[in-house]
Image (cartoon, rainbow, N blue to C red; front, top):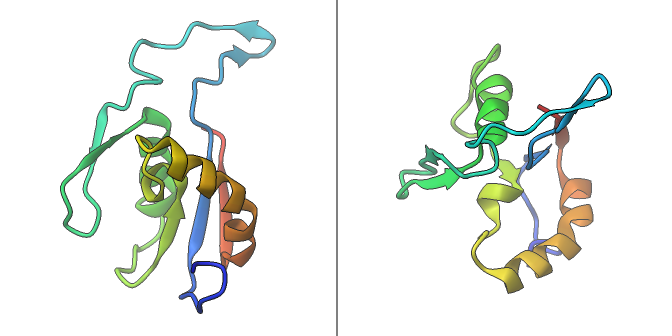
Length: 112
């Protein structure tokens, strides 16, 4: 099990899922693409799956922006590591998220 077995060092990414909606006290309607998974991601050579715009922005900026990505690095990102189509898995994993973030070597927060 994740909580009891030894883990390699990993970085956990916490990010916002939806459109922020408010800027300087004013509400803005989200662009039509914002909350729809529209970006394909391939992980470890496995077939791609779709993620939202904000996660792509985080990945591009944090992981591939100003630093060199090392292939041996491990990341835990809820939108990727949890099967978003499986309600039971999501419910179980949400209960573990505090422990997952607590076991991470680093935790990065992306607000968009």
